[in-house]
Length: 497
Image (cartoon, rainbow, N blue to C red; front, side, top):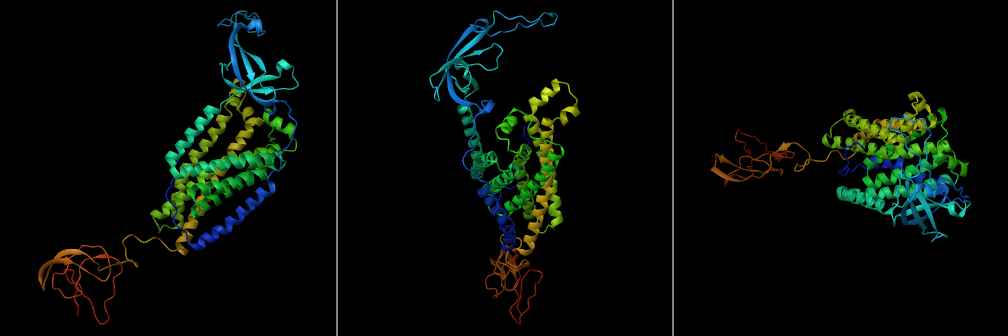
């Protein structure tokens, strides 16, 4: 279960000074132009043509449906089911075929492709994990070089309806809770998938360096997702700079330790098939590209949160110095580091759980398991990504603290307190109140003063001389007219000489 993270970036960022915006733009605009130039230069041409190997995912696939399911004796259809030994394991004889075992025979009709309408049968053993129902839609693989009766075989089931329903539930939940921000997040997610499918994968197959493609494509995803979700402001720009610096660190560390550990990136059937079909692809570079892209999403989360924390702390205490802002935001960042690193490690461990289970069954030592290439890849991926995440917290926090401190020195300064008059200070202001007037006797009435404000105090009674006022309010005290002086007595009244 993914730990929840508290974020402080729902409120809009305060406007920054023109000078600060120019400095940020001078850094990010050239970077964005370089990313755009990289997209144009590395954009793949036509889809690379290659002859299908007929192995695994490289087989031709078609749609089919189950038209009939019936029970038959396994022995009659050539399926040999072994009898189970006694629970105690005392019988040491060789297992014998179970002549009475009952299997299912499914008749399957191909519904797409050049052989639509052809039928074939599939035998389902009693202990098989996959069962068939009449009308169920399937994915079948086609092997043209096999005998006619063996050319088609079931490879998967069609899951379009449940997967679409789940995606719709997810989208509705995001929009209902996040509203416009949630809608922007969905748009950013769509753009990320588009860049991955239309640029990153085809460009790698086209022969481009996987690391360069991942850097360009990941940077494009980062810029679009950050500004689309969090708006065009200095706070988002600081998060983008922190993410960029952390990605560079991950790239350097990943390149160093992947080379030092002699990781080839060719560890299973899928990567072996890619290497067979496209021998020019650098598999270790592909591994490093996966590390960068896998770390990008969590990096965005960390950097945006840290930048927002600094901005919120500055809003709460506009006079706080750089060191205090940095120290306060780092306390938030340390909590975030603990939860995010744990999330990343558990995510990779969950993905490799079947492999770890096999190593446990084999009763191999921890050192042997950890240094095997398949597990070592996951360890390097996890630790390099985690180092980048840890480094992103002080990098982004320090940069954000410097930016807000510079903005306070060179910008317009903190916003005025609502209701306060320009200039600060206290002075006579408009107010209402009651109080005795030694000249006219007790009376009540609105007071008037040189500066507007809100206050309570004794007001002049009817017939009081002009200029008599009472009350206190926010604002700068006005200087008395030339040649006059003011004196306040114990009752709060002002008198002209």
